[in-house]
Length: 421
Image (cartoon, rainbow, N blue to C red; front, side):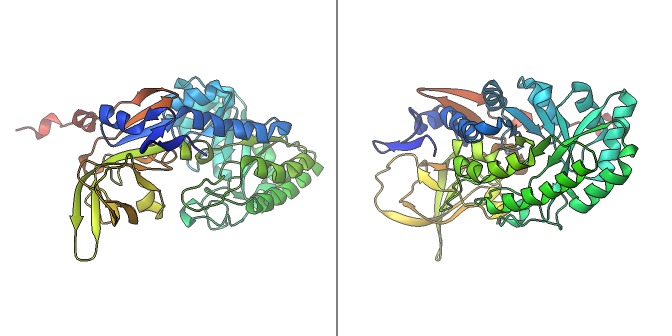
């Protein structure tokens, strides 16, 4: 559920007409619902309350400082994947001991900074990475806490670009390799403390079955490691819970917890979750305006001012996002449109063959389900400044990221003096 609804022919976010924000801030603009964000976070807290989980919001899903601050104040930790996200997490006020650090390719300087800051845990993706973390910890005279990310070879039945738990994926360590290293080579990493194991089998997963299969496979590993006298305290299930974009019927937090909680309790481990999309996906929309309506012999195009540089998911994954006008425009009937952006790429299509009210230049449209992997994946391709971001709380709205300017596009460029004639 989310807090975007139609009232008297207008789209509202909570108690604010969305068109009022678009008129004041301009388009394209990302708009987020404060209540939806917190409601989804609290649903996870309630669903897993018997396990008292550590819930670390995935910064890669949406890294806006105001959103991170809001969740941290509610008790969330943060899941990061880079030194830049570590800096962002600290700026948002997240205690280091509530930060987990994933990523296949951690740089030495990122590892050092994380150890020095005292983060809760590294999610380790490979044996070479484990050795690198050990080396950095020894140089600093510290001990680094880790969870080994296990690749359980489980198909999550989602898009191949966001499937991460199969043997063909670059992510994680096989169960066999993890067990062999722990049982025969753990003396090689004296500056490492093993907290447990980490699983993240993919994103936009709508059923519990793949999670259960993965948990059971890593559960066997936990038992064998414990039998060898090595303690395992935590199991991190990562994220991946699906949301509704079109006609999906994803499991609720309560239903998911009901299935996996008994298995977690049997393993006698403490639970960590890393939700991203589940919390923020349907808490945000992207608002854009029609620039032109273009007709050809075979198609009608609504050319809008948001493009694949603003929301790349449709171009990257073929992802579906609902599109709707902000208000009844009174132009007449309906027509089928391809909603396309201004980018010089054929892939710059935000929505294909959508039946919408007759559109005219200037009409504002909402693209739903854009709160996760929306702005955070935006770029300046084609020399386009990135969009503004707004947070709505009840009857009030707040600018939480200013729109970029053309000057921002060149802020880091340097023209060497030797090139100037």
